Image (cartoon, rainbow, N blue to C red; front, side, top):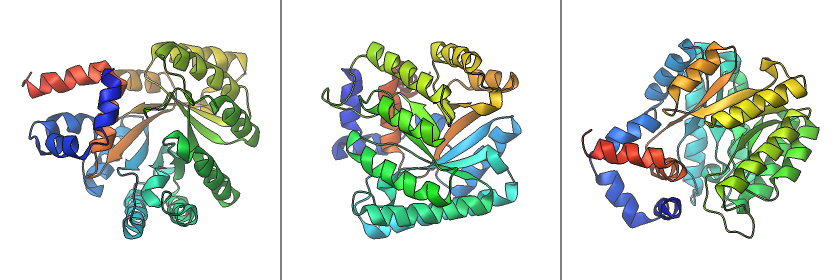
Amino acid sequence: MLGQLLFAASRNALVRRSVTAFPLTRKVVDRFVAGESVAQARDAVRRLCDAGLTVTVDHLGEETRDASAAAATARAYVTLLDALRPLELGGKAEVSVKLSAVGQILDETMALKHAREICAAADAAGATVTLDMEDHTTVDSTLRILRELRADHPSTGVAIQSYLFRSEEDCRALAAEGARVRLVKGAYDEPASVAHQSRTEVDKAYVRCLRILMSGKGYPMVATHDDRMISITELFADRYDRSRGDYEYQMLYGIRTDRQEALAGAGHTVRVYVPYGGDWYGYFMRRLAERPANVAFFLRALGGK
């Protein structure tokens, strides 16, 4: 119930104004968001890579309903990639792109055009691109754009959400194509007609999708903070003869940093999802909705503890 309320709040303009105007909110946001500027994002990337981690950087924003704003988001990614280029990070860096932020709601062709611009900038920087997945109404469009992009930029990846009923089939198709796939549980409030509702069923679906990806031809990106899922990933890696370079873990900026460092220290590739930018509200509220521990952290911070 709390999660549903927080998901609803993430799209409520009145709650948005109240939360973003509250001075102490910034104290908590700084745990989950690397900053608002390109310079702050670059500094966070350098710090994480120096610690033996890899990164995927997200310029925050979504559901753009204005063509000029969509173009501005694409330019922001190009600027970010230009700023990362001198760091010569190679495969240590990628960017994550929400297609709704670059015009998907307005026109799929527009979103594809902007995504191509971002992919070209990523190629020039020696980086890669992964498309974030949003609510279930965008899945078909996102996968169509992915396949167009992979024709010229074959390293382009995509996120798949295990709580959607369709995701096992999508994983099979993507694994057969040899795609890079970030497997997540799901961060949107989806109806029972399209998605599993209980945590147990979502976890079971995650394991089924994970098995498909680990046994396939693609590159699984296992996005989890759950120690059980990490153990299961290792079992599948043994079963399907995957070396540690044949898959990776992904975790969110500011969450379980000790686990991130421990996995990297053991020789795993660990990629940290680094969000930055001024439009942090929707992302922040979904992080609170996903884990009760994050809500407790928020309340403690507001209490000055």
